[in-house]
Image 1 (cartoon, one colour):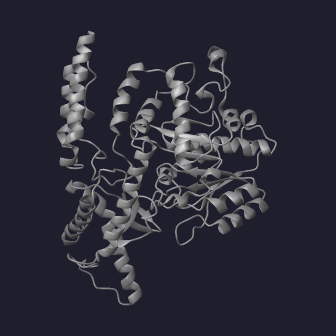
Image 2 (cartoon, helix red, strand yellow):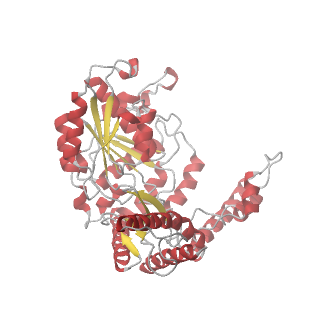
Image 3 (cartoon, helix red, strand yellow):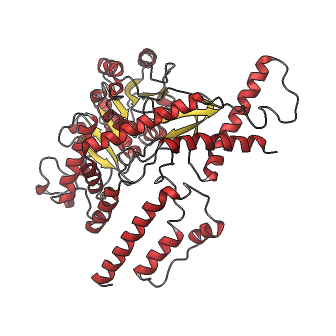
Length: 497
């Protein structure tokens, strides 16, 4: 392959990607793959001989681009997956061309990562000592990094060297979460040897927020039982409703009890950039650690998470292990990034973060986020105004939790060919069961229609729909279409035999 071959293919790839992005709004958001196309990918044989770049690009255009997840479309409201920022798309190509290991050393990617980690901390108002954070694959890995530092501090304060001796001989460490805490926290606790049994689920108030009084009771009960409380996890945007915990009172209690306060800000921490909801984040800066994802609300192409930790030495003391072959006097006082996390060879994530933030600027990002939260509040209004739908929680950030009431046009709730229950209590239970059954099926039914994409979840034991708005190109007409599609899909499901 000559340089001219690559140049021609690169121009073709640029046109291909540009056309794909431009055509997204007019395409179905998502559709199931054709069985033949799916099987062709699954059964692709290992090639014996190579193929020209032009053929590879043609195969990508034919076999891959027609079948996206859908998150690039402004009518995608599922999970917490953003459209890719154009600047980040371009920067990803350049980063791949350089292809360094960003573990450490004196090259541009290392210094750029230190800069963009500081930028992220500045965006959300988190204190950032030099070396107090790094980019990760996502918040799942960032959570492992942060909780490992919390675990090591707790062990040290108890007179135990966990890196030398492991957990043996240490009283069981106990952490505190809520029912809405993301599953990555439980995974981290299990992987770190803490055990999910020692991750207490603390009661929440009617607003779904962590209750400091219930937290204090749980901590005192565990201390009296000879256990070692060490961690509280608060949320800057829960997965179900986007609720933001009251950080001030939680931070007060953690300081009093010498507990590590970790904030899961995977998606929602960037909501602090919206002046209308910034007050919800008061006290966020008092956390010991914060995990968040530039690849969510900022639109940085996947993968890119970030771990921010207040105490640099606590973080480095948890992970630093420098074998002789990696000694590098040129690394400076901060050493290598591989001393602050689990990865040794690390991809050049920083360039796409830098490009995305630099292209929009703080003010541009803030406008995009404020538009998303405004759209979410508007969707909440549309839901509340519709007699077939029910809004299940206050819209605090950009997630809207709602459900279909299973009433209105179509087959009546409970019309299944059997006798209606006798008493009012049984009738209520039957209606709730019918609503749960309908809302469990609704997300896939909506997705298959191809016009919008929404996902489901369980909230307080009930099946719900949750719409997450991350795309500033979404319009109010898109919201109206979402409401109409949910109702139309519900009507089809309820009229089915």
